[in-house]
Image (cartoon, rainbow, N blue to C red; front, side, top):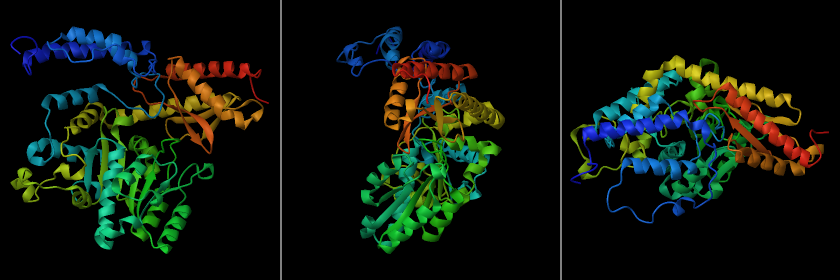
Length: 493
């Protein structure tokens, strides 16, 4: 590398870094010009790129050219103000700067000694966030608990399930693994089932209890209590419950306090998945949705969803850090050091599945400092207000119905079928989804609630304004009119 780009050179980094920031800033300025949902066909990129790496270096400009011509057409633009699918995955200037800094320092902070600031900042920042959420003191790092940044909510539920599994097996014996039972509603994210697969829980012992419109798709404490009693009577061992604050399909909120009474009386680890809606609970008027969290053993929210912190940053708090450490710790001789051996520090390698970890707390630290609590609350409230406005638009059109109550910034709705023909309804809404998304003007997603194919519009992209919500509704209405006219019906009877 006598000439060209050296492995690391401060001035080359400065020069090329400026170019990259300009490229990204220009992307954001023009993001509305792209179709939100990528319109390419599977395998498109293999036709455009060489089948082997270049022997000689190419220029950054050549890479930029390929990004524009070949990569961006295959990108679905999650940061577009017209992205309303799934749940948001927030990017922000502060989050981006924190990500930049993390990449620049590029430490591997698996234990305290490998970068003391990485461990200590994570502990401090997660205490800050816990206080913003008004979590019980048991979740703060000053006691036996504390917070840790995982990659995703899937990793969070996995590590606490492993901790709960090992805790109970230490009491009943390792041969009892086949008797362990996990609970959640049928609205719980599929990450719970994957955690069961990895944790060796028998598939037939993963109880996904039915939740329907009668409870607003929340888990019934009575149903849980009945299931637990039935399993105990049959010689099984209930050990883990995953409750939800903001389910993936409809933002249903499970009754934490009542569920906590069931878990407490039966020695069950109580995990709360608030991956999406946890962010809203920094606003005092939404904090009541996590009332009862004091009964939980662990609590998780994704700062990378709706809290202006670039992916990935999934925050997990536990009341008993030793449960995690006992399940996940390894201590080979080459990692031994005085601080760890003296139990003076936290080593986050023992709170997660991988050994290595990035300096992710920098992102969250910068978001909290550069925006402040009040601006973050205002940001959340604005999205909820925009979703409320969209809900009102849907409610005013008699061709549509709201399928589930709106709590946060997600609206679940559907186009009613002509003549109330429910057999035709699912296909009608599937077709509506496809035609709306194929325009490239907007991207929404779907779910199924009580067997109904349901459209989901989640407001949450940082650039989204009222005009984008109104434009999305206009596209949906126009495409609905076309579909209904094909059946000679521009309304319902």
